[in-house]
Length: 333
Image 1 (cartoon, rainbow, N blue to C red):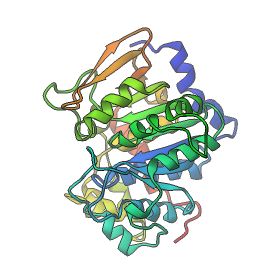
Image 2: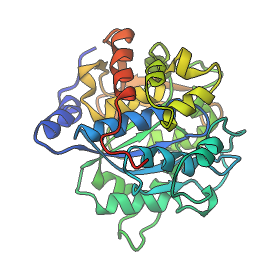
Image 3: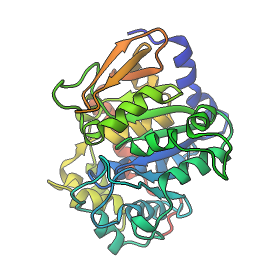
Image 4: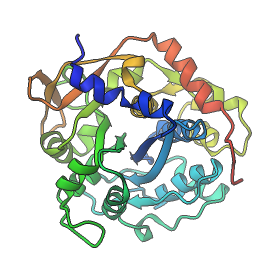
């Protein structure tokens, strides 16, 4: 498919600013409780930050953790990579964001240094999002959402506050350059049940798809499904919490690998996505509020785009594994 020139210019801006010495400003929104690839995506962003390609402005958690240790897991990884000061916010409310528990968040909390409180004592995600965006230059932020979209829905519905006299939708329109979403399947998902991230919070996914005011790039289920990463973590020190998360996950993902759903979204946000994928034409994504099933339709006025496989999965796996295994430039451990 041809790439629309205006989106190509927007999405390749990443290369231009990186070459010019300015890293891509990233807010990472994650359901870190459910799968270890969230920790892998955060590790990739930290490695790109070490290389001067990214700046992690904040991390917000979009899922509720039975052990209330999701923020702690994020803080552990931020601390390992030498950035313990990154703001962390957690979601409020349970609609579409309750999970059965995590096999690794509590263990990371208990086994590694961190500076986080229990999730319900952390700052609300919407406040962290508003404060971070208000302090950023106009049209400078890439939000990478690799979980449920409740935090972004709540941002859009938020009123003005002490950080900004703009409501959430206007704040996003002014400050966000692009939203990259790991969610859905393209050009359409199963009609009976949507992809996991959309199916767990379908009303939020529908609202964000309909109301997000900037270009949205979707990295669908099919993009990361065939890219197996994580084996390189066995070459890293045992004090690496990302290695520990992968070891604890089912079937020992550190030894056997895990699909790279969230890692590919992180890479697409921090580097020009057309380097690795074909970017679809403009279109509109519709999401079922009942099931989270989605469908993309071409539209000359649409703000939605999705990734299409171009680079062989094995090549992307090698690239991502190298980023995963790279030691922190300045670890706090």
